[in-house]
Length: 529
Image (tube, rainbow, N blue to C red; front, side, top):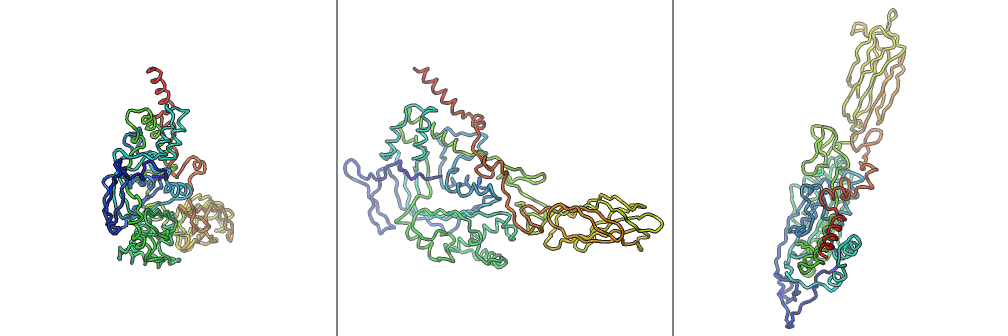
């Protein structure tokens, strides 16, 4: 949810008509008396600080953005015409224009990302907004300037009010402070470092816990072992430092507050001490803006329709930009996320487990000009070895100096970084124990398709080498990390890897033909006239 920064309610009115006001003692500021705005009821001090980091892992930006409503304590769709029915699972209506969405969604179009979120909160006060709150002068003025009729021609004037003041106002509040850090993890790059996204999440949890002095000793020791294995020897928060952090309430000069244990060990504690005097909203309930207007008035109904349409037009439709390959299952919770099983070359996220992995296929095609026997033609066969180990032998083709084997040797997935040499030996069969070697050659494998030949003592051997790097690997020996951008043709259409604006056809299926609704309302008004 995005905060607009414009005031809907007047929180600067304290005095009742009889010149009195409500004063409340603040126990966190030496019992100082503080005025409570007229629009506020049930104000109370309520200190509750958690020393445990709340952590979540998301394997897509769509999942991450959809989770951003977790700070909203009620159903924000109540009394709005956004009942999506069976299509609800594919719709994203909240948080799609937030800073978190801006941070996370675009980058997933260029590579395969997971996101881990660590957060902490500390409550000091709570209150509820009155059922008849005082409206801010600017909001009241904007409402009065709305057209009397909501139509295609006037729609943008309603949308301008929404752009300025938002779609909802806050009705129930927890005040204090919170910190949320969302870290981007290139899944397959982490895998090539020997790390799963779950392990990165766990170690970031441990480092965040250390910052707030709720250290998890076992995890810290495990993560230190991982750090010692890596070339950089840096912390996990230093290695995975592409991060979005939102700090609400208090004052701090440390932007990476949850991971400040090494840089500034006292930063988190100092931030906590500033919360009582500088609290901010971190958890809340919402009502639609139209609920603030008098019931049974055209303006209220018009604003209700405009807000409903605005939310739908800004919403996104989840639609997988690429499907899982045959034999690979999708995640039951996130159908656009593929899960690999029973393949030693890749992990559960379908990422290579180490560098150098490639599929190797060798084709022994034919030979020409062989000469093995003095009296008859050659009884030829070929031995194929990989890294010093004989892997396959072709059938014998009798009495033929120009044999055609066309035999495929599928070596499956191999680690080229551990060795990449293929050896061909061409033999003339006699009695098996005294076969004659007609020649041999050795080839170094590299990524790509290569057709070549071996010059033998007598004749030539023709062969084909096919080496395909594993997913997210490139380079001659498949040791370089390669990004996996989405299809170029879809990039402009999609907001994220698996979400794009809701197509008009889908809105029509849902019964949200906005122009038709306008025509219906216009016809009703004419009938009433």
